[in-house]
Length: 135
Figure 1 (cartoon, one colour):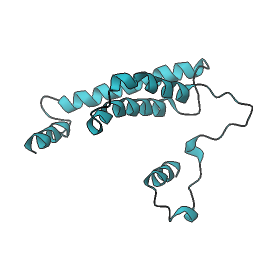
Figure 2 (cartoon, helix red, strand yellow; figure 1 turned 135 degrees about the horizontal axis):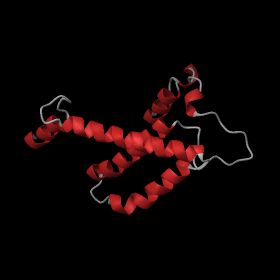
Figure 3 (tube, helix red, strand yellow; figure 1 turned 90 degrees about the vertical axis):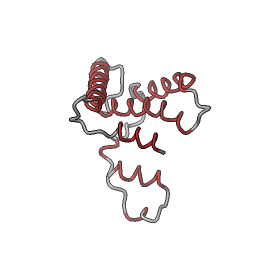
């Protein structure tokens, strides 16, 4: 248990520590996020990716997927992230590809109205997460 608590201490140390380890991690994450957002913005301007999700939002989701790829190994030791990279690339390709349809485009998730009281009794955690996102 002491080892786990030591890791937690390391991961949660304040950003203003003398050695700045946490600050470096945050700075790296922000640099990667900004770089991804810039690439997505340029690709969107060229018509190569979907423009309905803001580049910074898309970059955050990409980072979350990558984090999840590695985080999954802590829950499932048989999960090999290297074997899953092609699946993640497929997911990202489908997420980013430009919208092509003869049907009217659905509005971006940011414009969905708050889901009403008729759904208040739903016990699904996933539903409540989606409800919070949509509100």
